[in-house]
Amino acid sequence: MLMPMGHPANDTSPRVRRWTYTAEADEVSLVLPDGCVDILVSSCPRTGREVVGLTDWDAAPRQVRLAAGTTLTGYRLRPGSTVRLPDLRIESRELSILEAEIEGAARHDPEVTEIIDALGRPGGSVARLARQQGVSERTLQRHFRTLSLPTPVFWRQLGRARRAVQALPVRVPLSDIALEYGYSDQAHMTREFVRWFGQTPQQLRRNPGTMNDLAQPGLGNWSAGIGLKPEGPA
Image (cartoon, rainbow, N blue to C red; front, top):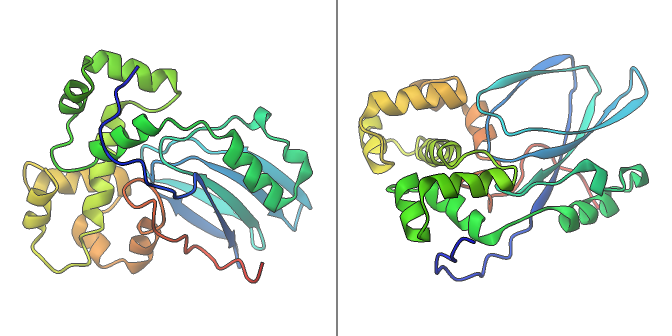
């Protein structure tokens, strides 16, 4: 068993956040790694079908084709949380009920959530976090695997990149951002950005649409507000 990290357990943010998106024309959307899994309810007017699926953790950018009029209702789980579709009564289709069911069925380990958060911070190496827990790196990896989570290295690298990308709007030298977030140099940070987001830091600075996507709640900024599309009055 992992040991609590000693931080106050006062984070009352939800484990699930609902968002919606409607494709106004045929499009190819780019999905960027955010450290979350989403339950997606997809409705296509052309086929009249409604499909429910569970995404996986993305380790690189991926493209998704959407037909005009397709509406997505997503239930994004907090980083480190998992859920099994068979545990949910999806057939109810009542969105408010489904959201509550996902919240109740989501598996969430508070200690692991703290570790995931710490891994993405400057100095948050896997070896250091394992020592703080009084376990070996292999034991820490095994614990993540038992919870069906990606490896600690995944959370370390993605968490650092997502935190560093949030500093891009501040017009400071990229070399300073790289140093602040624990990269060996600017070239190292650039390679990691291309790996996770498909663009260099300079390209991201010139791409407000992608920066807006990266500002959505996920690893490193879960407390932010979902901004994909307004849902309208409840």
